[in-house]
Image (cartoon, rainbow, N blue to C red; front, side, top):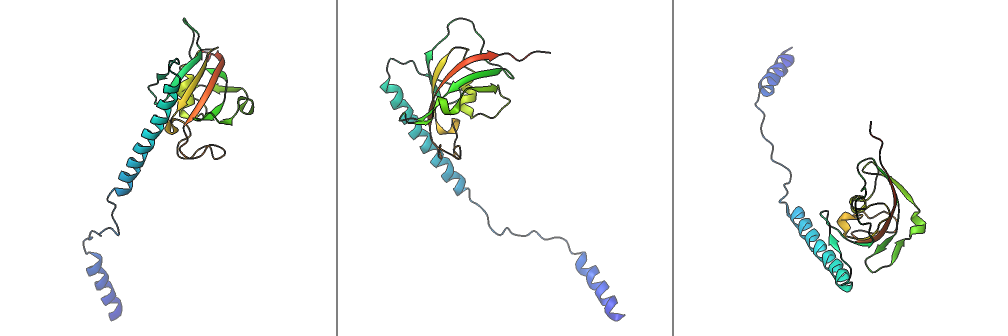
Length: 180
């Protein structure tokens, strides 16, 4: 009985102790993040230099910089008023994928004709944003830095880590989403 009383008193005394802050086992200084940022800045600069060299090699081509971080040139341009795809529109298009040296990674025949519901299906960032600039009947060549292409992970098949790409895209048709 005395043992039970002593245990109850001990629990009462030690159970009422105010909580103490624990020191962290380890802390990070942010050096990993700083190093990662520095690596990405250098990678971005190197890719931009490669792209600028390609653009310089074709002085008659009117390459344009997009607001989304890639460059493009019209191979076939439709002048005048025509529709560009909006959210939910179905875009029928063909394209190929090359590295910046012009080596084919995926040919147009391998990929086949695509039907893409604008902003409602998976597509790498650069191509998705590039399609928004195009009209039916246009052909455009895009130069995508790796961060607007497949980025760090690649496509887990033929496109490796941090590979900038060149894609030639032809929009065959744009079917507008029916409004309710």
